[in-house]
Image 1 (cartoon, helix red, strand yellow):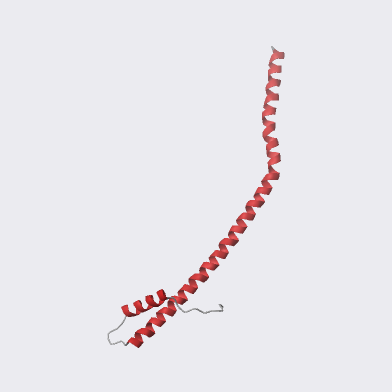
Image 2: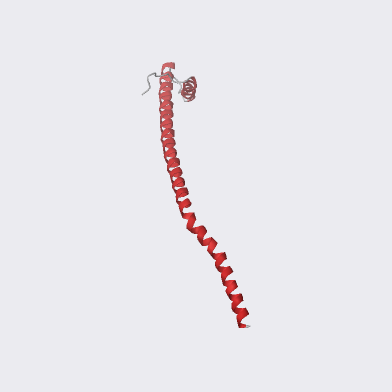
Length: 113
């Protein structure tokens, strides 16, 4: 809980009073309207607290997902560095193999003729 409890904001009070006056019944006293406005105001404050809590929870989840995503990317990067060595060796063997094969075929053709 917070050390300092602040009162409701002016905007909340005005919105609550506006809603209370909009739903005012004929013969309703000002005191009753004020009580209704206080109830609406408490409802608005409760709603705002819920939304802040949901936003905090969502922010925590997003941060954990971002951390996990970053860790996965780092581990993939580390794995790709070690895995790149054999892949490049395979890529360089193919041109050399084709070159040797073409020379062998050329020599074979030359010897047959």
